[in-house]
Structures are given as C-alpha cells and as structure tokens.
Amino acid sequence: MKRIFSGLQPSGVLTLGNYLGALRRWVELQESYDCLYCIVDMHAITMPLEPTALRENIYEVAATYMACGLDPSKSTLFIQSHVAAHAELGWMLGCKTPMGWLNRMTQFKDKAGKDKEKASLGLYGYPCLQAADILLYQTHLVPVGEDQKQHIELTRDIAQSVNSAYNASLFTLPEPLISEIGARIMSLRDGNKKMSKSDPSDFSRINLRDDTDLIVQKIKKARTDAEPLPDNFDQLADRPEARNLITIYASLQGQTPQKVCETFSGQLFSIFKPALTELVIEKLEPISHRINELLSDKGELARHLKKGAERAEELASPTLRNAQNIFGFVAR
Ligand code: TYM
Image (tube, rainbow, N blue to C red; front, side, top):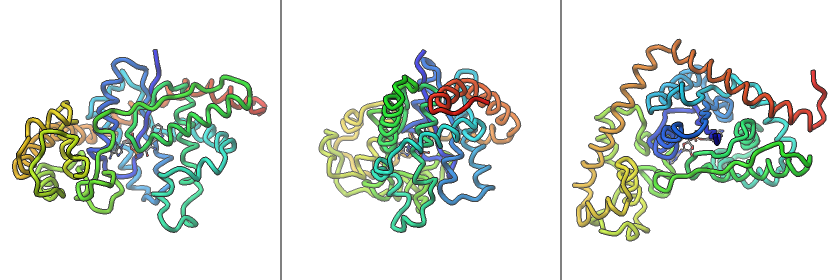
C-alpha cells in the first residue's frame, strides 16, 4: 500500500485554508493509503511561541484532526517530538543540504521578514527537518496546499542527492499531492495574500473554531468589489477577492468554481455573501462542536497520540539506522 505523510504546525488557530488545502483531503486519503499525519511541534518553535500556548495548540490540533474525520484506527496520528528520529535525520540531512538551496526558500524569506539577522538557525534549516519528516517513512505522496510545493521539491532534491552521493536507494522520492480547488485560499482582506494563521488581522481569515456570529461578521466585512458575478470563472482573473470567495464556496460545496459562477451569474455580493456564510457555518459548526468535545478529554487524545508515536517510531527506525550506517556512524 502506498504511503502518505503530511503535517501541520501547532502555531496558532487553524484556518479554513488549512482545512480546504490539507485536512479535508487527508480524511479522504486515509481510506486508500497508509497515512501518517503529524503535529509538527518542532517546526512550531522556529518562530516565537509561548510554551503554554504551544501545549494548548498541540491538543487543539490533535482534536481538530479527529473532529475533521481522521480516525486513529485508520491513520497514524502523532506528535513529531515523540519520535526522536525526526530530529536525528533532520540534522544529518542539514549536513548534506547546500545553503544555496535553502536561500531559495520563499517561506524563510516571508517569515524572517526584513531583519534576517534575527531569524533563528531553526527557521533557516526548517526545510531539512521537513525533508526528514517525509523521507523517514519512505513516503510516496505528500498532500499539501500550494505554499508547501517548494519544500516538497527540495525534499526530492535532498533525497536524490543523498541517494546518489552514497550510491544507495536510501530514500523513496516523494510527490506532492495538491488539490485543483482550494490549494491556495486567500486572505479575506487581500485577495493576493494567502489566508494564514500568522496574519495579525483575525478578520483576514476564518478559523475552524470561530462561532456563528464571528463568521457572519467576517464574511460581511470581506473585501469585494461592486461588480456582479460573471457566468464564467475565467472572467475573475483580475478580481482576486471575488475569485477567492467563489473558490471557497466551490471547495466547500464540492463543485467546480465554474459551476458556482453559473449558479450566481449576474448576482451582486449582497446575495452571494449570505449564501457563502450559510455554507461555511453548515460545514464548520459540527467540526468546532466536535473539537470542543474532544478537548474535554485530553487524556484520551494523549492515548491516541502515544499509540501513533509508537507505530511511527517503528516505521522510522529502519530508515534512520540505514542512513546512520551509510553515513559511516558506528552502531551502538
Ligand atoms: P502549515 O502548518 O503552515 O499548514 C498545514 C497545511 O495547510 C495548508 N495551508 C493552506 N492550504 C490552502 N490555502 C491556505 N491559505 C493554506 N494555509 C495553509 C498547507 O499547505 C499545509 O499543507 N511546513 C508545513 C508543515 C510540515 C509538513 C511536513 C507538511 C512540516 N513537515 C511534512 C508536509 C510534510 C507547514 O508549515 O504547514
């Protein structure tokens, strides 16, 4: 059975972008693949984050995974720091990755901002740890949103260069799996910017745990234009905010954006926005309700994560040992 690996950072609230770009797809995939879904806490400390907030976020991500439909009896759900092999292989791959490759990573440029001297070594080396996450499990497919494509391509480059440097087939080359619709959900305030949990404005995103009133307000205030909707999605090429709202609707409803345009053709946003609001609430309310239920028993969540880590460790161990051997380390 082909193997899938993906992960999400417990660095803040989870957004509709995380759901449509990643989580929702993960749930479908668990029916036909051997799936590992990780809570990447070691990635989350590459940016400033209070320890108490991190701990809460980890449980919240675990609860969200399950509330969205990930089933611990079908998928391996675990916390990255529970499997030490991630850090160990991450270091080894960092020693084999030229700085020139890391300098091209746009996520580092975005997150480091203007003052790169202040960014941590961890933030810079982040893609090597991500490569280790994926390569440890001989992963075939990595379901992610569009923004992670560059990291998966780098992972392939690292795998290929290590395999050929040691003339060994140590790592499987993974492929990114990116949905056609919903792979890049944009900010509600700026249709050219990604919807992100790290955006300072809460009104730029819909969070999976937003209550009904807040969702109503956020969609009401979402930036749009005064034009009616066209009957052809291609005509929205230079209307990024309108394009984004149509994409969100399509993605939640399981329709093509073209079909949504046909349904709302000629209508103004005063008609479309309430329909979108209703759909978002219909889809998110049960999830946020279930998250709250699951969070009321953290012991149960911890038990699932422990079992997940045990399986992940078993799967990761042969690849780590093999890499250590090939690199020339001496076995204990
Ligand atoms: P993270 O935590 O930023 O996001 C988790 C997943 O959500 C997707 N996503 C989006 N998709 C569509 N529209 C958006 N606005 C949007 N925002 C986020 C992301 O593409 C991602 O799939 N580096 C990764 C975490 C990671 C990882 C891994 C992923 C660590 N190791 C190994 C895959 C495999 C990250 O920061 O994702």
